[in-house]
Amino acid sequence: MNPQRIAVLGGSGFVGRAVCERLARRSPAGAIVVPTRQAMHANAVRALPTIDVRVADVHNDAALRGVLAGCDAVINLVAILHGSAEAFRRVHVGLPQRLAAACAALGIRRVLHVSALGVGDNAPSNYLRSKTAGEAALRAAALDLTVLRPSVIFGAQDQFLNLFARLQAFAPVMPLAHGDARFQPVWVEDVAEAIVRCLDTPATIGQTLECVGPDVVTLADLVRLAGRWSGHPRPIVPLPAALGHLQALLMECLPGQPLMSRDNLASMRTPNVSTRALPGLESLGIAPAALARIAPGYLGRSDGRTKLDALRAAARRD
Ligand SMILES: NC(=O)c1ccc[n+]([C@@H]2O[C@H](COP(=O)([O-])OP(=O)(O)OC[C@H]3O[C@@H](n4cnc5c(N)ncnc54)[C@H](OP(=O)(O)O)[C@@H]3O)[C@@H](O)[C@H]2O)c1
Image 1 (cartoon, helix red, strand yellow):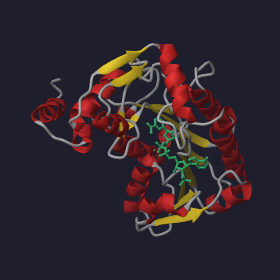
Image 2: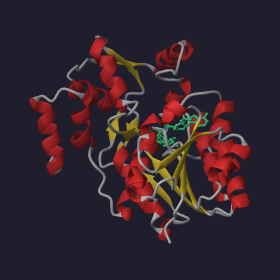
Image 3: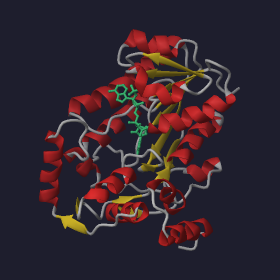
């Protein structure tokens, strides 16, 4: 039987909102529980009819159990992109450990955990190594676990194509380190659909799925496309690794979330593309959308070339 009451940790985030929209369409009122650190972070999902938003600290065992009580499945989307090694461990390892303990205490078996492509014990960044350890913590527990590993995720509210587009709206050139880093961008709606299908598909228990789109692109390609599709194409100035490192260090010193950190740069040393050794979205019956079919629509100006890109992609003739 499909899960009846589901906790979505990180349900207020970019992927979480798309997951909650899908779950809300088919669930009775209160059947989807979304914890948040701050009520206003979850405004978008609170507007959905069946979502029960709770302000709770998921790093507190009692609070986490309060959120999970009565649930028969959990989706874990909580993550950070920037922070100290300690912060990565707390969020990416400590929380999965707490989650495993809470599930054991409450008799919850079904867990879907969103990790990241590029994980591995020898991964080059704190982000990826902590994600690796988080997966391992959940695998070591007696759970009906499915792990999803997406490449970089695009969608109307993404944090990378929109950022590259915004930067090009005012910067005359785009200084870029690691422009040859490879990605296989995947649409947020395809990732959300995959999560919901996994929930409904017991055969995915024990599986690790790679979530990638049809296009392998470099970081420089992504910057170029974001510039073109937003109507502000700027020349890219390749930065040597040392200067890129310095640029990231300076960004880390600015107030607020950095646009780029040294740890992000380190992550790019490993290709963010499918290994093809694991099942992908196709195994769930999903034909992932191409970047050029979706991104021009939300990045702004729709000029002739952009429309052509979108049409080519729709016809798969690019
Ligand atoms: N976006 C991508 O390109 C991408 C690529 C590969 C993998 N992924 C993975 O996909 C999953 C979802 O990513 P996303 O882009 O949707 O992330 P997101 O938008 O940043 O959302 C993260 C969620 O985690 C919660 N959160 C953040 N820091 C927290 C902390 N310190 N303690 C507790 N909760 C915290 C936030 O909830 P509140 O603020 O409401 O508390 C938020 O809802 C993550 O596992 C991520 O690593 C994402």
